[in-house]
Image 1 (cartoon, helix red, strand yellow):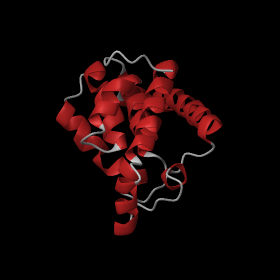
Image 2 (tube, one colour):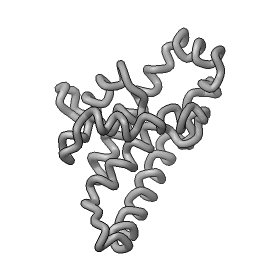
Image 3 (tube, helix red, strand yellow):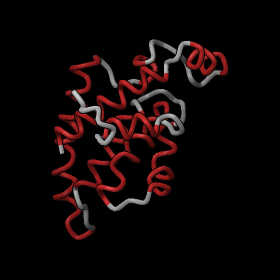
Length: 149
């Protein structure tokens, strides 16, 4: 789905994932496109990783993508309701497309029950190289986002 010349959003995000969580990785890949400083992007998305603070609810990569939808909307206070009404259906369709592909948006399910809220789960995540699964989701989220923007 993604081009692999190293310059696609998916490639940039996968590279960021070497150091940052999934939400940060996706947002960082788009930061320049929307005039967002990398450090600020990483600050904004830090709490969304591992399904929001390791709660393992909605996948962090999806959360990062939803933030990008907000940036792309060029939201302004004076037109807040129209912009909200414009963005929500796009996010809805995006999540539907992700679910159609993976069957869930929950981090815990996407990681096959690997519980990142525990020391054991984090150890298993590292030993089983589950970061590669996260990179797959990150890449997919970026490719899907590029199609939806």
